[in-house]
Image (cartoon, rainbow, N blue to C red; front, side, top):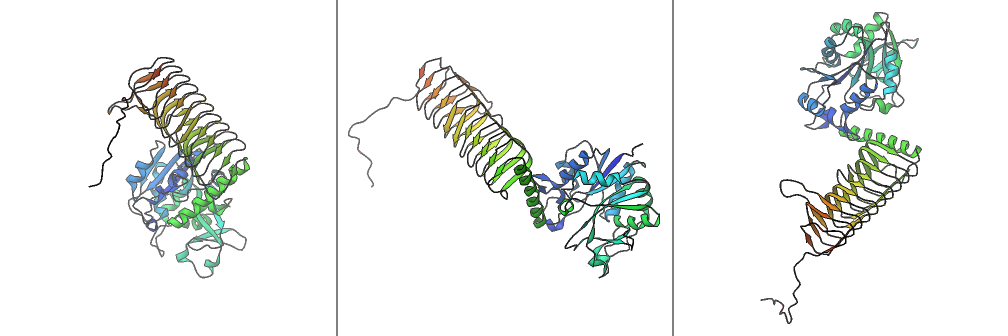
Length: 455
Protein backbone atom coordinates (compact mmCIF):
# COMPACT_ATOMS: atom_id res chain seq x y z
CA UNK A 1 0.00 0.00 0.00
CA UNK A 2 1.32 3.47 -0.88
CA UNK A 3 2.27 5.55 2.11
CA UNK A 4 0.53 8.97 2.04
CA UNK A 5 2.70 12.01 1.45
CA UNK A 6 2.59 14.85 3.96
CA UNK A 7 4.49 18.10 3.51
CA UNK A 8 5.80 20.22 6.36
CA UNK A 9 6.69 23.79 5.38
CA UNK A 10 8.86 25.73 7.81
CA UNK A 11 7.83 29.38 7.75
CA UNK A 12 8.28 30.63 11.30
CA UNK A 13 11.47 32.66 10.92
CA UNK A 14 11.61 36.40 11.42
CA UNK A 15 13.78 37.26 8.44
CA UNK A 16 15.50 40.18 10.16
CA UNK A 17 17.90 40.72 7.26
CA UNK A 18 14.96 41.67 5.02
CA UNK A 19 14.59 44.78 7.21
CA UNK A 20 10.83 44.70 6.81
CA UNK A 21 7.66 44.61 8.89
CA UNK A 22 6.36 42.02 6.43
CA UNK A 23 7.17 38.40 7.37
CA UNK A 24 9.94 37.12 5.12
CA UNK A 25 7.85 34.35 3.53
CA UNK A 26 5.32 36.92 2.28
CA UNK A 27 7.86 38.79 0.16
CA UNK A 28 7.04 38.11 -3.47
CA UNK A 29 8.84 36.35 -6.29
CA UNK A 30 7.15 36.79 -9.67
CA UNK A 31 4.29 38.63 -8.00
CA UNK A 32 3.46 35.81 -5.57
CA UNK A 33 4.55 35.43 -1.93
CA UNK A 34 7.39 32.97 -1.51
CA UNK A 35 5.30 30.78 0.79
CA UNK A 36 2.53 30.54 -1.80
CA UNK A 37 5.00 29.19 -4.35
CA UNK A 38 5.94 26.40 -1.94
CA UNK A 39 2.31 25.63 -1.06
CA UNK A 40 1.40 25.40 -4.75
CA UNK A 41 4.29 22.99 -5.31
CA UNK A 42 3.09 20.84 -2.41
CA UNK A 43 -0.35 20.74 -4.01
CA UNK A 44 1.19 19.74 -7.33
CA UNK A 45 2.69 16.72 -5.54
CA UNK A 46 -0.78 15.63 -4.46
CA UNK A 47 0.12 15.90 -0.79
CA UNK A 48 -2.42 14.35 1.57
CA UNK A 49 -1.59 17.01 4.14
CA UNK A 50 0.16 20.39 4.06
CA UNK A 51 1.39 21.51 7.49
CA UNK A 52 2.77 25.05 7.61
CA UNK A 53 4.75 26.00 10.71
CA UNK A 54 4.47 29.71 11.50
CA UNK A 55 5.82 31.93 14.25
CA UNK A 56 6.88 35.54 13.64
CA UNK A 57 4.02 37.42 11.98
CA UNK A 58 1.79 34.34 12.23
CA UNK A 59 -1.44 36.32 11.91
CA UNK A 60 -0.17 38.18 8.86
CA UNK A 61 0.86 34.94 7.19
CA UNK A 62 -2.52 33.30 7.83
CA UNK A 63 -4.46 36.33 6.60
CA UNK A 64 -2.39 36.52 3.42
CA UNK A 65 -2.84 32.81 2.72
CA UNK A 66 -6.53 31.90 2.62
CA UNK A 67 -6.60 28.17 2.00
CA UNK A 68 -8.77 25.46 3.49
CA UNK A 69 -6.28 22.70 2.76
CA UNK A 70 -3.52 24.03 5.02
CA UNK A 71 -3.08 22.97 8.62
CA UNK A 72 -1.42 25.84 10.48
CA UNK A 73 1.06 24.92 13.21
CA UNK A 74 2.28 27.59 15.64
CA UNK A 75 5.90 27.45 16.81
CA UNK A 76 5.76 29.85 19.73
CA UNK A 77 9.51 29.70 20.38
CA UNK A 78 11.97 29.43 17.51
CA UNK A 79 14.24 26.69 18.83
CA UNK A 80 15.51 25.34 15.51
CA UNK A 81 14.37 23.32 12.52
CA UNK A 82 14.09 20.05 14.46
CA UNK A 83 11.84 21.71 17.02
CA UNK A 84 9.75 23.26 14.23
CA UNK A 85 9.10 19.93 12.51
CA UNK A 86 8.24 18.36 15.87
CA UNK A 87 5.35 20.82 16.28
CA UNK A 88 3.69 19.39 13.16
CA UNK A 89 4.17 15.69 13.93
CA UNK A 90 1.05 15.15 16.11
CA UNK A 91 -1.12 15.74 13.04
CA UNK A 92 0.79 13.39 10.74
CA UNK A 93 -0.08 9.66 10.62
CA UNK A 94 2.63 7.14 11.49
CA UNK A 95 2.57 5.51 8.05
CA UNK A 96 3.16 8.77 6.17
CA UNK A 97 6.14 9.88 4.15
CA UNK A 98 7.12 13.42 5.12
CA UNK A 99 8.81 16.06 2.98
CA UNK A 100 10.31 19.00 4.85
CA UNK A 101 10.29 22.21 2.79
CA UNK A 102 11.05 25.86 3.53
CA UNK A 103 8.84 28.88 3.01
CA UNK A 104 11.80 30.99 1.91
CA UNK A 105 12.96 28.53 -0.79
CA UNK A 106 10.23 29.35 -3.30
CA UNK A 107 11.32 27.84 -6.61
CA UNK A 108 11.87 24.19 -5.74
CA UNK A 109 10.54 22.07 -8.60
CA UNK A 110 7.80 19.49 -8.13
CA UNK A 111 9.72 16.93 -10.24
CA UNK A 112 12.74 17.27 -7.96
CA UNK A 113 10.58 16.73 -4.90
CA UNK A 114 8.75 13.83 -6.48
CA UNK A 115 12.06 12.05 -7.01
CA UNK A 116 13.04 12.82 -3.41
CA UNK A 117 9.75 11.49 -2.04
CA UNK A 118 9.99 8.29 -4.08
CA UNK A 119 13.17 7.32 -2.23
CA UNK A 120 11.57 7.48 1.24
CA UNK A 121 10.65 4.27 3.03
CA UNK A 122 10.97 2.69 6.44
CA UNK A 123 14.44 1.57 5.33
CA UNK A 124 15.66 4.87 3.83
CA UNK A 125 15.51 8.61 4.17
CA UNK A 126 16.21 11.02 1.33
CA UNK A 127 18.31 14.16 1.33
CA UNK A 128 18.50 16.93 -1.27
CA UNK A 129 22.06 18.20 -1.69
CA UNK A 130 23.80 20.52 -4.13
CA UNK A 131 27.39 21.45 -4.93
CA UNK A 132 28.16 25.16 -4.76
CA UNK A 133 31.19 27.15 -5.84
CA UNK A 134 30.73 29.21 -2.70
CA UNK A 135 29.14 27.07 0.03
CA UNK A 136 29.40 29.79 2.67
CA UNK A 137 26.54 29.65 5.17
CA UNK A 138 25.43 26.11 4.39
CA UNK A 139 25.75 22.88 6.33
CA UNK A 140 28.30 20.53 4.77
CA UNK A 141 27.63 16.92 3.76
CA UNK A 142 30.03 14.48 5.44
CA UNK A 143 30.65 11.23 3.58
CA UNK A 144 32.77 8.18 4.37
CA UNK A 145 35.46 6.75 2.08
CA UNK A 146 32.79 4.78 0.24
CA UNK A 147 30.85 7.95 -0.54
CA UNK A 148 28.02 7.21 1.87
CA UNK A 149 26.46 10.14 3.72
CA UNK A 150 27.34 10.00 7.40
CA UNK A 151 26.19 13.35 8.78
CA UNK A 152 25.63 17.04 8.19
CA UNK A 153 27.70 19.60 10.03
CA UNK A 154 26.44 23.17 10.28
CA UNK A 155 28.91 25.84 9.24
CA UNK A 156 29.28 27.30 12.75
CA UNK A 157 30.17 23.86 14.08
CA UNK A 158 32.42 22.80 11.18
CA UNK A 159 36.20 22.37 11.31
CA UNK A 160 38.45 24.18 8.83
CA UNK A 161 38.77 20.96 6.82
CA UNK A 162 35.01 20.45 6.74
CA UNK A 163 34.49 24.01 5.56
CA UNK A 164 36.31 23.13 2.33
CA UNK A 165 33.53 20.68 1.37
CA UNK A 166 31.42 22.04 -1.51
CA UNK A 167 28.50 19.62 -1.27
CA UNK A 168 25.95 21.24 1.00
CA UNK A 169 22.65 20.52 2.63
CA UNK A 170 19.65 22.29 1.14
CA UNK A 171 17.58 21.55 4.24
CA UNK A 172 15.01 19.76 2.10
CA UNK A 173 14.61 16.11 3.02
CA UNK A 174 12.19 13.21 3.05
CA UNK A 175 11.66 10.82 5.95
CA UNK A 176 9.07 8.44 7.26
CA UNK A 177 6.87 9.81 10.03
CA UNK A 178 7.85 6.84 12.20
CA UNK A 179 11.51 7.81 12.02
CA UNK A 180 10.76 11.44 12.79
CA UNK A 181 8.66 10.54 15.81
CA UNK A 182 11.48 8.31 17.08
CA UNK A 183 14.41 10.62 16.40
CA UNK A 184 13.19 14.19 17.01
CA UNK A 185 12.63 13.75 20.77
CA UNK A 186 16.28 12.65 21.00
CA UNK A 187 17.76 15.77 19.40
CA UNK A 188 20.20 17.83 21.44
CA UNK A 189 20.79 21.57 21.38
CA UNK A 190 24.45 21.25 22.37
CA UNK A 191 25.80 23.27 19.48
CA UNK A 192 26.96 26.79 18.61
CA UNK A 193 23.41 28.00 18.01
CA UNK A 194 21.81 26.32 21.00
CA UNK A 195 19.12 24.94 18.65
CA UNK A 196 17.63 21.56 17.79
CA UNK A 197 18.91 20.85 14.29
CA UNK A 198 16.81 18.68 12.02
CA UNK A 199 20.04 17.77 10.22
CA UNK A 200 21.18 15.75 13.24
CA UNK A 201 18.72 13.01 12.24
CA UNK A 202 21.12 12.07 9.42
CA UNK A 203 23.65 10.73 11.92
CA UNK A 204 20.80 8.97 13.77
CA UNK A 205 19.76 7.29 10.52
CA UNK A 206 23.32 6.06 9.98
CA UNK A 207 23.49 4.73 13.56
CA UNK A 208 20.23 2.85 12.98
CA UNK A 209 21.34 1.35 9.64
CA UNK A 210 18.76 3.40 7.76
CA UNK A 211 20.05 4.23 4.29
CA UNK A 212 20.57 7.88 3.37
CA UNK A 213 19.62 8.40 -0.26
CA UNK A 214 20.67 11.58 -2.02
CA UNK A 215 18.94 13.56 -4.75
CA UNK A 216 20.02 16.72 -6.53
CA UNK A 217 18.08 19.62 -8.06
CA UNK A 218 18.41 20.44 -11.75
CA UNK A 219 19.90 23.81 -10.82
CA UNK A 220 21.12 25.45 -7.63
CA UNK A 221 18.53 28.21 -8.09
CA UNK A 222 15.81 25.69 -7.22
CA UNK A 223 17.12 25.47 -3.68
CA UNK A 224 18.29 29.04 -3.22
CA UNK A 225 16.93 30.47 -0.01
CA UNK A 226 16.19 34.15 0.42
CA UNK A 227 17.52 36.02 3.42
CA UNK A 228 17.79 39.58 2.12
CA UNK A 229 16.53 41.77 -0.69
CA UNK A 230 19.65 41.23 -2.79
CA UNK A 231 18.96 37.49 -2.91
CA UNK A 232 15.30 38.22 -3.57
CA UNK A 233 16.22 40.29 -6.63
CA UNK A 234 18.70 37.67 -7.87
CA UNK A 235 16.11 34.91 -7.72
CA UNK A 236 13.49 37.11 -9.38
CA UNK A 237 15.78 37.74 -12.35
CA UNK A 238 16.64 34.06 -12.66
CA UNK A 239 12.96 33.15 -12.65
CA UNK A 240 12.19 35.76 -15.29
CA UNK A 241 15.09 34.53 -17.43
CA UNK A 242 13.52 31.07 -17.39
CA UNK A 243 10.18 32.55 -18.46
CA UNK A 244 11.89 34.41 -21.31
CA UNK A 245 13.59 31.23 -22.54
CA UNK A 246 10.31 29.32 -22.38
CA UNK A 247 8.51 31.98 -24.41
CA UNK A 248 11.22 32.27 -27.07
CA UNK A 249 11.32 28.48 -27.42
CA UNK A 250 7.55 28.60 -28.04
CA UNK A 251 7.99 31.08 -30.91
CA UNK A 252 7.70 34.46 -29.17
CA UNK A 253 9.98 37.33 -30.18
CA UNK A 254 11.25 39.24 -27.13
CA UNK A 255 12.98 42.45 -28.17
CA UNK A 256 14.95 42.32 -24.92
CA UNK A 257 14.59 39.10 -22.90
CA UNK A 258 16.11 40.81 -19.86
CA UNK A 259 13.26 43.31 -19.69
CA UNK A 260 10.23 41.09 -19.20
CA UNK A 261 8.20 40.26 -16.09
CA UNK A 262 5.75 37.37 -15.94
CA UNK A 263 3.91 37.34 -12.61
CA UNK A 264 1.42 34.59 -13.25
CA UNK A 265 0.79 32.46 -16.33
CA UNK A 266 1.38 33.69 -19.87
CA UNK A 267 0.06 31.58 -22.77
CA UNK A 268 1.15 32.52 -26.27
CA UNK A 269 0.52 31.60 -29.87
CA UNK A 270 3.03 31.74 -32.70
CA UNK A 271 4.69 34.94 -33.92
CA UNK A 272 3.87 37.00 -30.86
CA UNK A 273 6.15 40.04 -30.43
CA UNK A 274 6.74 41.57 -26.99
CA UNK A 275 8.66 44.82 -26.70
CA UNK A 276 10.65 45.94 -23.65
CA UNK A 277 9.37 46.38 -20.10
CA UNK A 278 6.13 44.45 -20.54
CA UNK A 279 4.59 43.15 -17.31
CA UNK A 280 2.06 40.30 -17.25
CA UNK A 281 0.06 39.41 -14.12
CA UNK A 282 -2.51 36.73 -13.39
CA UNK A 283 -3.58 34.65 -16.39
CA UNK A 284 -2.85 36.28 -19.74
CA UNK A 285 -3.40 34.77 -23.19
CA UNK A 286 -1.73 36.27 -26.27
CA UNK A 287 -3.00 34.58 -29.40
CA UNK A 288 -1.13 34.24 -32.68
CA UNK A 289 0.45 37.35 -34.16
CA UNK A 290 -0.23 39.66 -31.21
CA UNK A 291 2.15 42.62 -30.86
CA UNK A 292 2.77 44.12 -27.41
CA UNK A 293 4.45 47.52 -27.39
CA UNK A 294 6.91 48.83 -24.80
CA UNK A 295 5.97 49.56 -21.19
CA UNK A 296 2.62 47.77 -21.24
CA UNK A 297 0.95 46.23 -18.18
CA UNK A 298 -1.50 43.38 -18.84
CA UNK A 299 -3.39 41.43 -16.15
CA UNK A 300 -6.02 38.67 -16.43
CA UNK A 301 -6.70 39.34 -20.09
CA UNK A 302 -7.14 37.64 -23.45
CA UNK A 303 -5.61 39.37 -26.47
CA UNK A 304 -6.87 37.70 -29.63
CA UNK A 305 -5.10 37.01 -32.91
CA UNK A 306 -3.42 39.89 -34.67
CA UNK A 307 -4.27 42.53 -32.08
CA UNK A 308 -1.76 45.31 -31.54
CA UNK A 309 -1.22 46.87 -28.12
CA UNK A 310 0.79 50.06 -28.42
CA UNK A 311 3.13 51.62 -25.87
CA UNK A 312 2.24 52.43 -22.27
CA UNK A 313 -1.14 50.71 -22.31
CA UNK A 314 -2.78 49.16 -19.22
CA UNK A 315 -5.15 46.22 -19.73
CA UNK A 316 -6.84 44.67 -16.71
CA UNK A 317 -9.54 42.03 -16.90
CA UNK A 318 -10.35 42.65 -20.56
CA UNK A 319 -10.99 40.61 -23.69
CA UNK A 320 -9.46 42.24 -26.77
CA UNK A 321 -10.78 41.08 -30.14
CA UNK A 322 -8.82 39.88 -33.16
CA UNK A 323 -7.09 42.64 -35.09
CA UNK A 324 -7.91 45.30 -32.52
CA UNK A 325 -5.63 48.32 -32.09
CA UNK A 326 -5.16 49.61 -28.57
CA UNK A 327 -3.18 52.61 -27.32
CA UNK A 328 -0.78 54.18 -26.90
CA UNK A 329 -1.60 55.28 -23.35
CA UNK A 330 -4.96 53.50 -23.23
CA UNK A 331 -6.51 51.89 -20.15
CA UNK A 332 -8.90 48.95 -20.41
CA UNK A 333 -10.47 48.15 -17.05
CA UNK A 334 -12.29 44.98 -15.90
CA UNK A 335 -15.31 43.93 -17.92
CA UNK A 336 -14.11 45.48 -21.17
CA UNK A 337 -14.95 43.31 -24.20
CA UNK A 338 -13.71 44.49 -27.57
CA UNK A 339 -14.86 42.80 -30.76
CA UNK A 340 -12.81 42.21 -33.90
CA UNK A 341 -11.24 45.22 -35.58
CA UNK A 342 -12.00 47.71 -32.82
CA UNK A 343 -9.81 50.70 -31.97
CA UNK A 344 -9.22 52.24 -28.55
CA UNK A 345 -6.71 55.06 -28.82
CA UNK A 346 -4.55 57.31 -26.72
CA UNK A 347 -5.83 58.44 -23.34
CA UNK A 348 -9.03 56.44 -23.61
CA UNK A 349 -10.37 54.58 -20.57
CA UNK A 350 -12.98 51.84 -20.75
CA UNK A 351 -14.70 49.92 -17.97
CA UNK A 352 -17.40 47.24 -18.23
CA UNK A 353 -17.86 48.21 -21.87
CA UNK A 354 -18.84 45.92 -24.76
CA UNK A 355 -17.63 47.41 -28.02
CA UNK A 356 -18.87 45.98 -31.31
CA UNK A 357 -16.93 45.03 -34.42
CA UNK A 358 -15.17 47.89 -36.18
CA UNK A 359 -16.08 50.51 -33.59
CA UNK A 360 -13.61 53.24 -32.67
CA UNK A 361 -12.92 55.26 -29.54
CA UNK A 362 -9.82 56.99 -30.78
CA UNK A 363 -8.77 59.45 -28.11
CA UNK A 364 -9.37 61.32 -24.86
CA UNK A 365 -12.60 59.56 -23.85
CA UNK A 366 -14.16 57.56 -21.02
CA UNK A 367 -16.62 54.78 -21.86
CA UNK A 368 -17.97 52.85 -18.88
CA UNK A 369 -21.02 50.64 -18.30
CA UNK A 370 -21.75 50.82 -22.02
CA UNK A 371 -22.76 48.66 -24.96
CA UNK A 372 -21.63 49.85 -28.38
CA UNK A 373 -22.82 48.26 -31.60
CA UNK A 374 -20.89 47.77 -34.82
CA UNK A 375 -19.02 50.60 -36.59
CA UNK A 376 -19.66 53.19 -33.89
CA UNK A 377 -17.42 56.27 -33.90
CA UNK A 378 -16.88 57.99 -30.57
CA UNK A 379 -15.31 61.43 -30.89
CA UNK A 380 -12.57 62.89 -28.72
CA UNK A 381 -13.51 64.06 -25.25
CA UNK A 382 -16.67 61.95 -25.04
CA UNK A 383 -17.71 60.50 -21.68
CA UNK A 384 -20.47 58.22 -20.52
CA UNK A 385 -21.82 59.70 -17.30
CA UNK A 386 -22.60 56.34 -15.73
CA UNK A 387 -22.56 57.14 -12.00
CA UNK A 388 -25.19 59.24 -10.24
CA UNK A 389 -23.39 59.20 -6.90
CA UNK A 390 -25.16 56.05 -5.73
CA UNK A 391 -25.83 53.70 -8.66
CA UNK A 392 -24.26 52.87 -12.03
CA UNK A 393 -26.33 53.20 -15.20
CA UNK A 394 -25.85 51.94 -18.75
CA UNK A 395 -25.36 53.70 -22.08
CA UNK A 396 -26.35 51.92 -25.32
CA UNK A 397 -25.17 53.01 -28.77
CA UNK A 398 -26.58 51.17 -31.77
CA UNK A 399 -24.84 50.17 -34.98
CA UNK A 400 -23.34 53.00 -37.00
CA UNK A 401 -23.82 55.69 -34.34
CA UNK A 402 -21.59 58.77 -34.72
CA UNK A 403 -20.82 60.68 -31.52
CA UNK A 404 -19.29 64.11 -32.00
CA UNK A 405 -16.39 65.34 -29.93
CA UNK A 406 -16.81 66.58 -26.37
CA UNK A 407 -20.13 64.84 -25.81
CA UNK A 408 -21.53 63.83 -22.43
CA UNK A 409 -23.91 60.84 -22.54
CA UNK A 410 -25.87 60.93 -19.30
CA UNK A 411 -26.93 57.38 -18.46
CA UNK A 412 -29.29 55.65 -18.58
CA UNK A 413 -29.58 56.60 -22.24
CA UNK A 414 -29.87 54.85 -25.60
CA UNK A 415 -28.88 56.07 -29.04
CA UNK A 416 -30.39 53.96 -31.82
CA UNK A 417 -28.80 52.78 -35.09
CA UNK A 418 -27.16 55.34 -37.37
CA UNK A 419 -28.04 58.32 -35.18
CA UNK A 420 -25.67 61.29 -34.97
CA UNK A 421 -24.75 63.31 -31.89
CA UNK A 422 -23.54 66.85 -32.54
CA UNK A 423 -20.22 67.85 -31.00
CA UNK A 424 -20.37 69.47 -27.59
CA UNK A 425 -23.75 67.95 -26.71
CA UNK A 426 -25.02 66.77 -23.35
CA UNK A 427 -27.43 63.94 -24.14
CA UNK A 428 -29.97 63.16 -21.43
CA UNK A 429 -32.78 61.60 -23.49
CA UNK A 430 -32.91 58.64 -25.88
CA UNK A 431 -32.16 59.31 -29.55
CA UNK A 432 -34.05 57.41 -32.25
CA UNK A 433 -32.56 55.79 -35.33
CA UNK A 434 -31.25 58.13 -38.05
CA UNK A 435 -31.86 61.24 -35.88
CA UNK A 436 -29.43 64.10 -35.26
CA UNK A 437 -29.29 65.16 -31.62
CA UNK A 438 -27.78 68.51 -30.68
CA UNK A 439 -27.91 69.64 -27.06
CA UNK A 440 -25.79 72.70 -26.45
CA UNK A 441 -26.21 76.37 -25.68
CA UNK A 442 -26.85 78.78 -28.57
CA UNK A 443 -23.75 80.65 -29.73
CA UNK A 444 -23.69 84.44 -29.37
CA UNK A 445 -21.28 86.67 -31.31
CA UNK A 446 -20.86 90.13 -29.78
CA UNK A 447 -19.43 92.79 -32.09
CA UNK A 448 -16.80 95.31 -30.98
CA UNK A 449 -16.11 93.41 -27.76
CA UNK A 450 -13.55 95.35 -25.67
CA UNK A 451 -10.91 93.00 -24.37
CA UNK A 452 -10.00 93.37 -20.70
CA UNK A 453 -7.00 95.56 -20.04
CA UNK A 454 -4.33 95.20 -17.37
CA UNK A 455 -4.77 97.69 -14.54
